[in-house]
Image (tube, rainbow, N blue to C red; front, side, top):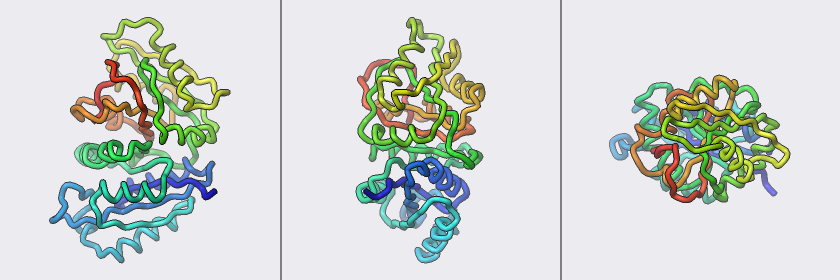
Length: 287
């Protein structure tokens, strides 16, 4: 059986290279190979999807391919290169169909306007279209070792990982990391033992090995995004995992917990799509 693959959306900018390096580290325990997918677009014909500078966008495809191969050579994990002239949904869908990656990855810019553009115009459409795990890597994130302290932020609702998320569970198990389940109770929540139910939901999900004993971190009476970011600092976490529920694919992006966390997170964030009943919960829409 060939090794699994990780699909990295790259634009030759520094955050994209950082995402590729980090994805390589995450996939190393399974000897995963990287597929670097570059979306080559003309900013005049396709302005909504361009995330590179005008100079970069007008490079010839040959020059772009050379630069991507140079990037691949700098990575510790084996990597192949693909340059697509299709629109983002078509290119990603075709690459996912051929490579069946465990997860997709992309880098995040430090500038808030650029960050919001990337999330709203690329990250969320990718989640909607593929329903596969998506790794978002901030430009300042460390990429030296696989994660050792992983935080899973969940509400108290039960959830069922979709097929793509279940396929990632063996990778999580191979990191040898310590896991912390974070439940942040907002001011409106009055349910008893919500944190314990959140911990139980993670155990029942099958995402973590049966022998794993995750720690419960509870924070009360603060906004969810604030509590999650505080937990990252308190636990000295190096990776955050968020559940992406079906209802998270609709709504107002600027009001979402995920968007607020991504603006403030110093560590990479792994979004795991799940299937769940459409019941009210504390986590507002992601997009």
